[in-house]
Length: 365
Image (cartoon, rainbow, N blue to C red; front, side):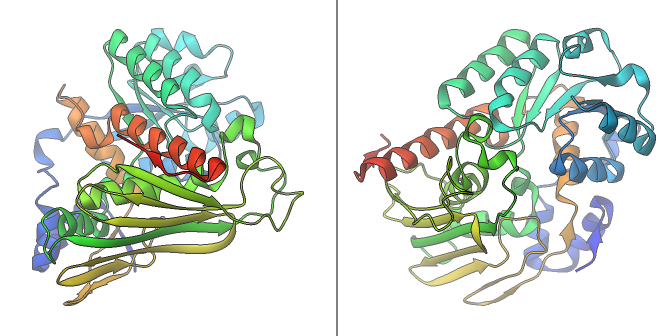
């Protein structure tokens, strides 16, 4: 499916009833015209490239600066995106960004173990922050990040792009409004095949863990926003290690089961040894599913009543624009993307690891 800009998405959105239900959550653009939020990307890895492309399409954001520890990357990005020299920082001089009025927000796209340090440093520099998921590598780190941003009077968001994606907005609506009755079972899994021994995600000191940290967080987050509930317990199992050299520090795969107070059981797997990208919910009076579901798309879905059909959007551009509109109005960011949300997910991820290590059911209440 062809990618659409946010403006095109809004023009098309009235075409069908299902699409219209999603369009209503996206506010009018007119009152923000002429305003831009200036963003510096901190870390220039693969996902930063997706964000940069999204910011080129964004209507309310501008890629204004970069932070990198690699001089060759700095020179390349400077040329490709016309970044002024004064807006280019490394990890040593980053704190001087505090005097740069051309930067409003720092988007932290570094390895997980570096999220805490650079979120806190950005906050102390007086900049709003978006930090990629997982928010950090422990819940206590998340709390420190939240406190630092509150103390500095800046706002903190987690890069939960799927909260602005039409298919995921629809399964959230179907679940929380109980369109097919109470949900009894959810299966949500995400995985891909990893083969690069030098990838930082396979180094526990940088990643904090394996596919659960990188991919499983999406499954946990999806379970929570579809049900609109918090899990009460978890059981979990590590999968077999088939490549001991590649997975000497982090798990190769992990499966877990979350129990929710409404009676739903959510089973998920995340893995680095095969590809899967699927969501399925079975309720009292029907089902709904997406496959692909929680990656970058294009998504495809159906319910027991028929196909789901929404336009594909640029997820990064849409997420940044929606956050920008809130910040440009000096309003509070919504709770579903705030730092507290990232901390909730991190607590659950830690409990999943504990359950897998011990073989015990771990209470979350």
